Each structure stands twice: as C-alpha cells, then as structure tokens.
Amino acid sequence: MPATNGKVAGNPTTVIGLYQIKKGKEDQAQEVIGRHWPTLSKHGLVTDTPARVYKGEWGKGHFFMEI
Image 1 (cartoon, rainbow, N blue to C red):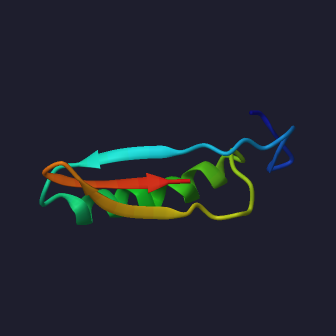
Image 2 (spheres, helix red, strand yellow):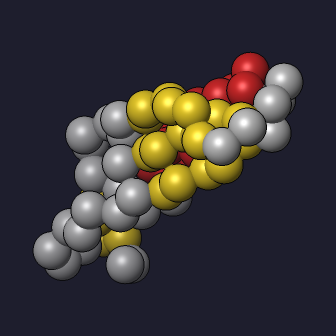
C-alpha cells in the first residue's frame, strides 16, 4: 500500500506473520523480528499501532507470531 506523506494510504489491513524458529535460535529471531516493525514504519507501510508479537512451542522448536 503506497504511503502518503509518511502515512499509510487507504484502508489498513491486518497481516499475520508466522515464523517457525529452530531450537536455540529464539533470541536471534526475536532480535530480527524486533527490527521488522520499525523498518516497515520508516517506509510508511504500517499504522502507528505497534506490532504484537507472541511466542509459542511448535513441534520440536518455537514460533513467533507477529500481528
């Protein structure tokens, strides 16, 4: 969605990112996910509401869900 004057244009859409993480890589993944929202915001691709990030177990590892 193109930005207008640094703001999201049009009707915002909720997007869910689901990341399956290898065991032992949770801290590294959390760091990368923590940089994701600020990067999107810098380019005017998200609203002012910050992302919510959840962590859980999945199979033999973990997952992060970013909304």
